[in-house]
Amino acid sequence: MSKLKIILRNLGPGLLFASMAIGTSHLVLSTKAGAQYGWIMVIPIILANILKYPFFEFGVRYTSVTNKTLIEGYLHRGKGYLWFYAGITLLTTFTILAALYTVTAGLFINLFNITNTSISIVALGLFLIISTILIFGKYKFLEISLKFVVSILFIALLITTVLVLIQGPVTHVPNFKPTPIFNEFGILFLIGLMGWMPTAVEASSWISLWSIEKWKNQDKPSLKESLQEFNIGYGITTILAVFFMIIGWFTLYGTNIQLSNNAVSFADQVVLLFTNHIGSWAYIFIAISAFATMFSTCLTAHDALTRVSLDIVSLLNPKTKIFSTKLAFGIGVMLLTIINFIVIAAFSANMGKLVALATFVSFIVAPIVGYMNLKNVTSSDLDPSFWPGKKLKILTYAGILFLSCFSLYYFYIVIF
Image (cartoon, rainbow, N blue to C red; front, side, top):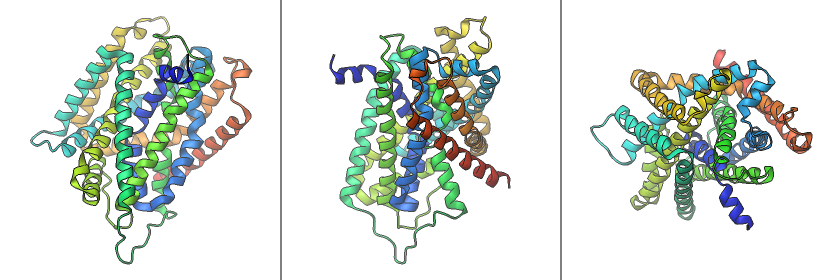
């Protein structure tokens, strides 16, 4: 079998990771980075992707070698590890998923000019569509559909970026002064950008669960092939982040236009400003890019959080086998739909506060989860020949130090 055919056959977990990662961190934060600070923001975007790489790679490495999920590895390190991760997942399940659907529903309404329909109703429609896809399509359909979604998204964003580059940067207003990066506001923005780029570290276990599911339907690839597939997905997330940054830089930097902190309003602003800069005919490319970005994120996050929740519960209740059945997965998908719709309906006015809480927790625990992943891949569960090499270990410790410093500073700003 040719090398290309092997890569195409193994495409799956890394692609799902890319779909999940390119949500608000890319659409909102990367675009805003370019819009507010210009080309210099390519440095923290690439730096964050490099320094966080080992933590996500370990999810693939551990599962490929042991045939166990990263979460099982936490249990092997001690039940306290598993309970700690369960607490993070619980908070994420009831905040981030509801927020993602709210943003996606708002984008759908704004981008496609739907009137007389509330965000909660559109969100309910999205919940039902995605739940149906996940329950009846299962993993295989999810993987196939996301190959098309990510391909369309990549092409649409590539065309958008090329159009922006051809048009050239927007003219700066007279006496334009660049926004300072190293003041309190700029540092906070950097923390948010790098903290969520490409995604939260606790999502590293999602990749291992997708890998286990994929291998049920085909022969398991080697560690080298699994890492190769993941690297493709990870590379796509990095490239798309740079694309979004370029769009923000060329269409908004130097205009002194204040962008909304609300993700829905922000996306609407970006679309309008972009079409004013390029032309109304280009609206469809940015509209597809924005909606496909958030829809694919909802799809993959809903699937992953269902799998993670069931995996945690089954490990905490090893004598009960029902949590690993197809019926349990379907029930889990619907439970997340019902609970998160209730969250949207009941707490929509305070959604920002709920997400802020989840963001705060993700920042604080990121270096801890990174260390837990390192403990897994350097444990007796793996033969030492499969442990990460010296260079990857050095990058891992650099990433833990980097995340620790950011977390402590973020904690200091929020508390004091």
